[in-house]
Image (cartoon, rainbow, N blue to C red; front, side, top):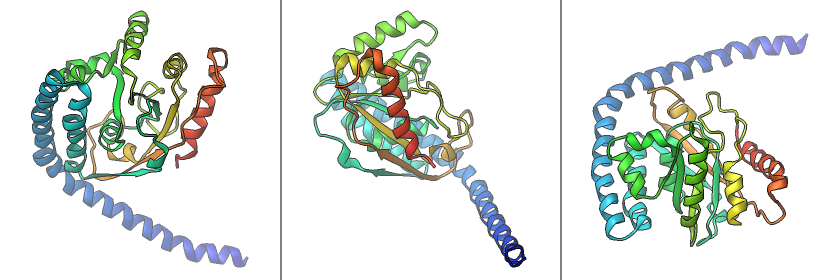
Length: 265
């Protein structure tokens, strides 16, 4: 009986606090909309045009690594900051300087790419769907940066593209995969595809598992409902693949998935 009385007393206060938080969020969201269309979107276009052009020039004169470092990474950081998205990296010590990785992360939002490129601080190439090559300036710059575009509707061409890309994943250059294949609508991990793990086994390089948190609330999948917020990049210890083979790839996938899932809310 006493427990019931205590619950009755606490519940209204809790509901009031939740209501106030929800109301503040709605007000902040409403006030952000003019900023999004009048400030962020124009800045996104400017940053993409200027730094995209610079990345093409640098990659042509030098190489893709220089283009990524001096143009690609600043482009990602500036767009996050312009959107009032603040990124925090946890466990950066788990990255070994000069080591190439197959980087594997969960995927919740388009802002995952901006956060990882801007803040991961490694020479990163990502695997993306071929349709992104058609995006003005972004597509051309991404091709020059040696990012890997695969045709999901042509498995044979996709395998050939990945095989050609393997030559570039050396000397500290890493490749980024979202093995779910698409963004998660509810934040829960989808099943992992095998492509990233096959590449790690073929190249004989470790997997670097990463958990992205917070981006789903900043820009939910399939919407333009952008809001400011905080994103966390949790870097897990690398997974050495010495004891795995193509015959035990299912175990490797399960271990990686378990690690990434362990840091999700």
